[in-house]
Length: 189
Image 1 (tube, helix red, strand yellow):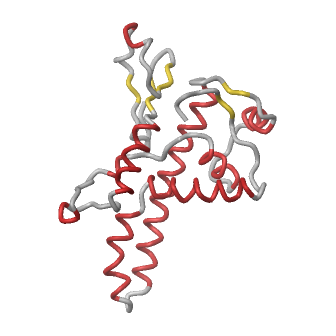
Image 2: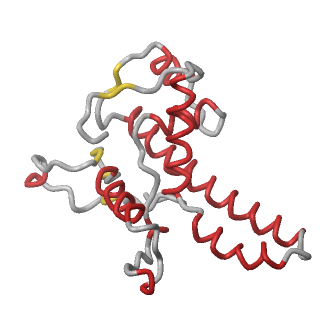
């Protein structure tokens, strides 16, 4: 079943024997397939960034649907989300991660971490946007800020939050401030 903030999709009907050999970022259960498409989404986001994050045709390109890209669920973003308390694991899963046990690729633990990451980042996007609107409404004397609000709201997305979290995670990891991340042998991230 799909859930709020999870635009990668769950496909209950299309998994057939002919797809068993398919190479894609998907987790299969007895009733559904969850596609994450991390590498495809990051490729689109990288092109968008390389072209100057343009969203109007007057800028030479026209990315109108960046809001449909989710965070890139891998290992670093859930690690930092867990560190700041935005993502919580069950005691059993926390013990596996903390003991650096390898999780099964496409297994329940890995899928829960990745799906939880997508949901947490989507909730962060909504909270940041609400905060920007609240600040703008509270400070009505500054028209310049109001004029920039639309641009700020447009720039807040799962992609930009992911980039921020990734960079923060990399910095904190270099300073040895992060706990362990989940470990999975995979080519998807």
